[in-house]
Image (cartoon, rainbow, N blue to C red; front, top):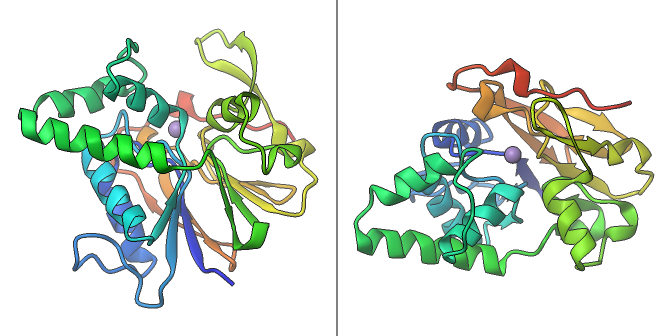
Length: 247
Ligand SMILES: [Mn+2]
C-alpha cells in the first residue's frame, strides 16, 4: 500500500503549496516538504505560469522527485515551458509571461541552473503516473481506460490537453469533451487541467484543479483515504475561468 497526497495545479502559487503541505503534516525544515510517516507527494502537473513564484515551485518539486519523495508528470503549461527552455519559438502568453519574467530577472548562472533543472525534471517524467500497482493513475488532463499503459502521440496529446475537439468557446478557450463521465475503469484517476469550483468526482475520477491561481483553492487528495484537503488562494478571483463538467 502506498500513501500518497496528490496535489492539483499549482501554477506558481508557492505559498499555497507550502501551506497545503503543512496542513497535510509535511515538515519543511530541510527546505522541502517531507512527511514524518513517509507519505509521498504526487503532482498533476502545471507547476508554473500566472502565479507569483513559479521558479520556486520548480526547485522544490525537482528536489522532491530526485530524492524519490514525489511523483511528477507534466501538464500543458510544463510542456510549453520545456519548449521555451529548449529555445523553441513558443508564444509567451496564457501565463507563460509571468514565468519568463521571473526567469529573465535572474543572472546568467541562475538562468542556466533553473532551465537545466526543469529540462531534467521534464525529460525524466513519464506522461502519467501509474501508482500502487495500477490502482491509482495521475494524469494532468486525465486519461481513458484504454490509454493506460500506452505512450504514443494520441495519448500524449490527451494527457496534456484533454479530449479536445478542435473547436473553441467564444472566449477562445478550447472545447473539451468530458471523458470522465464515460470512464468505467477500476483504477482511480486523479487529474487537473480544467478549473472547477470544488473537486468533481465522477466514476472513480477526481478533478482536483480547484483553480488556485484564479482565486479558488489549492487541493490535495489523500490516497488511499480519499480525503480532500484544501487551502484558500491568495490570488485575485477570476470567476469566469471556472468550468462546469458535463454529467
Ligand atoms: Mn492548469
